[in-house]
Structures are given as structure tokens and as C-alpha cells.
Length: 603
Image 1 (cartoon, rainbow, N blue to C red):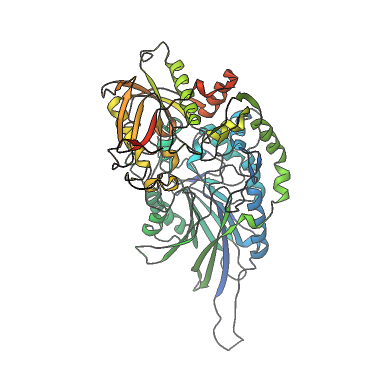
Image 2: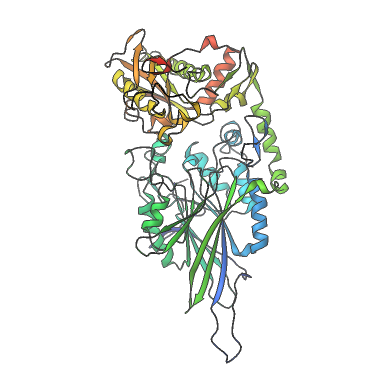
């Protein structure tokens, strides 16, 4: 199917693309207070609209941790899952009147749990007569009105995304996702819903969907030459006036983009990754923005628009269906038109309610299939492996990842001109709680080690480039003088760098001197027992996120690509363990690096 021919994407000769849907009912939230006949003017009519929003659901339908095979729990007492969100939505609709509410999502829906992986890869929705995606089933049943595209929507390729889109009863919006050839919208840019108000003009609510420009980097293998992703500010400036010209009294933006104004991909893309606050500040006539992507909780953020002086209200609910944002919009009808009088926002906590039994019944069979799948035994471990200390000590459990990647790339390059080059590999300590227990090893044990659906790429790098790569990675550690007591809880994540942007590199030996300033920390860097030759060529086995520029590591994105594949690294780990039968650290563990201070080991 052509990229721009979708059931919710309608075109006219002059207006571009969008969706217009009319609500059909009277609105009890509208109020008119008229003075007695002949005794004073009528007071203007008012209307109260409530916009609900979720974001970064990442496949969470149930309050269940598939990696631990148990109900989800955390220290803060959070609960997860659309089944909880459904209960909250039902409560809000009962209080406000369903006809006075709108339910939106800001993206990252179909990737993130074994549930979503199963229906993308094991029992794929793209197969002939395949299943309906669990997230589509749940969101349709709850009654979403529209959702924005997230960057993780593209992780399984265009076909999976388009199939998911076709299974939805509501539009998937992305004004800044355009066809690479025609530059026309590849998804509906906007959605308009009409709310009928007795005795007054209907209220029209325009919803603009914006996604993340970083998709062009992170999923380059799927989107290059097919889709382009423009800047959020530029596209909002184009489409918000369009919504106003179509009569929108209220403009809400659903943006898969954080508020910080920063980017994780350096200057590889000319557009800001976390641009939601910039949109509010620079583009007039927006009333509210549902924020996503950053996995932060922002109950209410007020940003003043530079051109109009009006306040725009932003809210970001916590990811994984842990929160529901609520925007309460008050409108007044005066002189023949509606205008927004005020907007306020807050978040509701899904731990305050129980699962909606309608949702748990609907998806109980799918859940049971995935639980059975992840509990398959694929091998036996001779020792317990854990990531508890992996971010500051060279841990065998991370060596397992790099060993698998080395083996896969060596096999792929056998018989090629690059077969004689040494293969090194990167891996990150994604989780601080992953464990592969001694004894039976299951798919869920291995999936918990590698929680992302990354795939493997082989890049050609020089010794000098690898050295720079390691220096960049070592910025993760907080500079700690030799005479200061080391607190491991304060040792890492310097400058807010997440754990997934710290890389081990196997096949080399090196020290990271954390007493030194960033950029001067890699010491005693050797290969095969000799100081690293800057001119030496290496094949770096690297995940596709990093290979495409994720984390802005130097040189790797522009390095020559020798090979890549679409099989997930997680699957390769499971295959490796299955083939071995026994998971023994002597087959993969090695001490490649250590932390030092002025040459003295920290641990």
C-alpha cells in the first residue's frame, strides 16, 4: 500500500491531509446563566472540555513484569498497564460526561515488552490471517480518539507499523513524517473532533500529531529513502494555522518529544529531539501539548508563547501507563465564537485503581501465550550472572553479549575481504537488576538482559577512532579525585547520561582513570598485548541504535558499514545459549577494563 494512502488520511486539492470527525451529542458541560427578562444582559455560555492523555505505553497492557514472571512492583509503589488506565478513563468519563472528553496518546506503543515482541516476531500481525495487535485491541476497546507516532513505532519496520495502523479504530498522527519523494504527509497530520453544545455553535477541537526527527537516525535501515522527518517547530508552524482556518476553537498538540530542548544525536539531524517546549514558545494558537518520549512525569508545565503572550499548558504522564494526564479546558462563548478561557493540567496515578476486567478478559489469552513463551528453558547456567555492579565493574554478564556479537559478526564476514580483521564488540549495561540464575535459563532471563529490540551491525573502525569512542564513553563517570571516598551510587551518569549510553568494548584492554577530566581518561589501551596502533583496522560489532548515531558516539555513524541484519541481538543471545546448552562464564567472560584513579584500581 502506498505510504500516503491510509484509511484516516484524506486529501483535498488545497488543504493537505487530515481527519475530521463530528461528535453527535449534546454537551451537559455547557452552561448558560441568563438574567431574568429585562434585568441585565445574558452571561456568556461556557463549556468544559477534558483532554486525557497517555504516552510511552511500550506494550504495557497488564501490571506484569514478564522478565520476572510476576506482578510489577517498584519502590515507589507504581502500577503499570492499560488495564489500569482504562479504569481511570472510565472514572473521568463518568464524572465529566463521555461526550465532553477526548482521549489521546503521544506515541511509543508497539515496542517495549515481550508481549509486543511476540506479536511482531513470533506470531506476527503481518502474517496472512495474523492476529490483531494486543495494543490495538486494548486501545480500541478503551476508545482512544487519536495517537501520535513514536520513534519506537518504527522498530519493526514499515510493514508492521502499517498493519498496526490499519488495525486501529482511530488515526495515527504524524505531521512531520513525510514521504521521502513527494514530501507529502505519510500519516494524517491532524484530527478534528466536534462537540455539540445546546444553544451555541459546536466546539471544534483540533489535534496535531508530531513525532521525533531522531527516527531518521535510530531506524535508518527501515526509513531511509522512504520517509523523512521534519522539525517539530517548523511543522507545527505550518499545520496549526491550518487547524485554525478549519475552525478549531481549541488546538491540542500530541508530541512524541520531550521538553528539554536537547538532543541525544548531536548534530547528525538538524532538528531538536526534545522540542515540545520550543513548539509552545514559538508557535502561536496552541492551547495544550501532551508531551512524550522523555519518560518523565510533568503534571503541569506552563510556557508563554513569545508571539502572543498566551500561556500554553504542557503535561507528560509517566511512561508504561503509570499515569494519565488530564487537561481541563474552559471555554467561553461570546460574540458568536468560542475562546479558551483557561487550561489546567494534572496527572492521575494508575496505582490508585484496579484493572478494568473488560481489558484483562479481552487480552487474557494473548498474555498467557507470552508468559508461556518467555518461560521456555533454553539452557543451563553453571553460575549466577548479574548486572548489579555492571556499570562500574567489568561484569561477565555483559561479556556474554559482546561474545555473542563477536561470534555472529565473525561468521557473517567469513570468506569476505574483511574476514582477517579483528572483531571487537560494544555492549551497554542496560539494566541494573538483570540476573541469569544458576540452573535453568529461560528466554525471559535472556530477554531481561537485553531489553531493547536492537539488531547487529558491523562497522569498520581504526584504532584512533576506537580510542576516541572509549574516551567519549568514559564521560559517563563522575570525576572523582584519588582522596575522595567512592560512592557507587554517585559514580556514574555524569551529566545525566543514561546507562544505555555507556559502552563496554571487548577485545581490548584498558583502564578508565576517573580522577582525570573527561577526554583524558583512557589509559594503558592495548590490543593483543601491545599498545593500540592508531592505524590498526577493526570491525566493531555494534547495535543498530549506536551504529546509526544514537548517543552521538564519535565516528561510528559515519564509519563504513560492512554488514547488518534484522535479527534482534536478544534472539542471537538465545540462539547462542541454546546451541551451547550450558552457559559457563569460562566460554565468554574476560576482564577487559577497570576503573582507576591515578593508576590505582578503584575496586
